[in-house]
Image 1 (cartoon, rainbow, N blue to C red):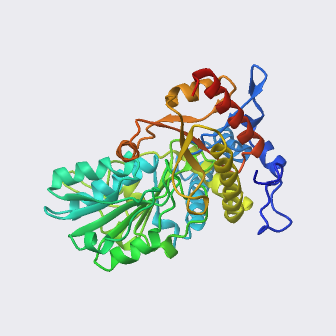
Image 2: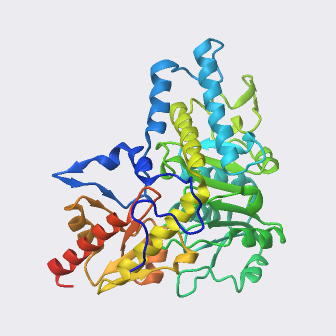
Image 3: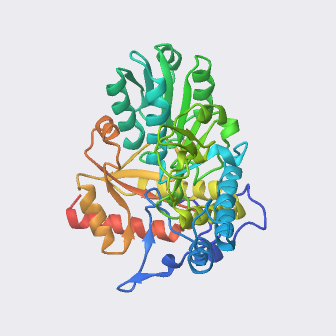
Length: 424
């Protein structure tokens, strides 16, 4: 069995002075809860992560002490709220190494960020006969908007194939790009297989033919360092709730020159410079894309979340998750009848999908829930990928930095119970 310290999980590459896991876990109130004497074992962070007190306190403090709208009032607490809101934007820009805070547009989530690009950039840039390149790894949020756009605009959808281990096959990438591709929409990490895609290489080759690149970073930004300037992507979409932040807020990074050429996504208050009865002129980016009152408390919580992750260190987060994923893969591999999907540990993140014989994933998840073990079961909003895997659904265990090897061992005991109960 792979030897990993269940307390510190400190890889050999990490030095003294890194975060103490017991103290980190204590930051998350939900991790100390139990049900019928059974502690919560949360292995569904790919769906949504848990929240530390720093995030909860930042949002509570806003509501309790300076609750006011932003960019409107000239009184003290409104100015304080505006400053905190914009400080969140600046923190998020630093976190992904955006050139400036104005590159960051707040949205409700990754889905809305991608739809913003599809509606604003896509409906003004995609012409009949143009092509959009995606892959079978994509979450529905990075597939359905492009299907709708292609149907509306008379464009074509092309797809990068996968190899036998669920990695993108780039053998014919240049040939696909030469077919009139105007946009490549690709995930940096698969929410099903954990596959980490070479988006910097894809961006380099896409830009060579004049195509823009949108990266779905919902699963990557929370788990390892992401540098938009190094990736040279034109758009990056991600959600706060998957990176220890609140629900209801996400972000779209956009290259400044591209954002400035895009029309508004929604119309109303805050996104204008001047309105007459006949016409309007629009605000500069990013306010142009932030109509109406935004999720102010959530943005402040988002800023607190990236500050928390920055203090942990994203290299530490990545190293810790890599060690946990290696342990999870080895533990699952030792259970008879378990089929694991996806590439080797060095090419993936912490989302691990598997099946237990012919037991339906919903039955697996339900039986695990009796032991207060939370995993995901279903098609994970990736039905085309399920088709390629020749399964209707999978069970998914996804780890984050606050998980432990003891929790993975508990999962293994639960899966042995599943085999006994269902005779698999």
